Image 1 (cartoon, rainbow, N blue to C red):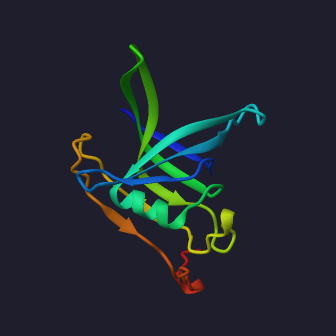
Image 2: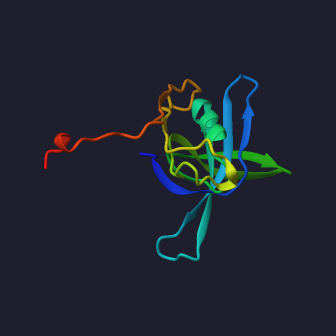
Amino acid sequence: MNSVQIIGNISTDLDFKITPQGHEVVKFNVAVNNPYNREKVSFIPIEAWRRSAELINDYCVKGNKIGIVGSIEVDQYEKDGQKRTFTKVVAQNIEFLTPKGSQAGGNSQGNTNTHENQNNAGNGNRGQNTRIDNDPFQVNDSDLPF
């Protein structure tokens, strides 16, 4: 099993690009506090693809709180004759956690949204399933079982 859940604040500007194949990708870091040592913060590289990338680019800015469920990937590359490794989280599900009207950086478009992007073994054939709630959920007292 390769699964990770992260809640933190976007700590870098969003790096949104479209690949030569026409796929959207956004890269950024999320600052996550250590629950045992509040002075220690981890900056975790995140990569989101396709519709997830578009939504993050449209609704998020540096400083926004975001929830991410994804998988860890380790990339290897060579630079100056030395092999290097780079660990990142590839987002499969995202949730925007910064409330409307309190956007860091002044972006007023954001809201609490959920986007799920199911990954097909990393082969680029990723399905998409989007849920965006713009209206508040109404519950009557008669609907409650207690």
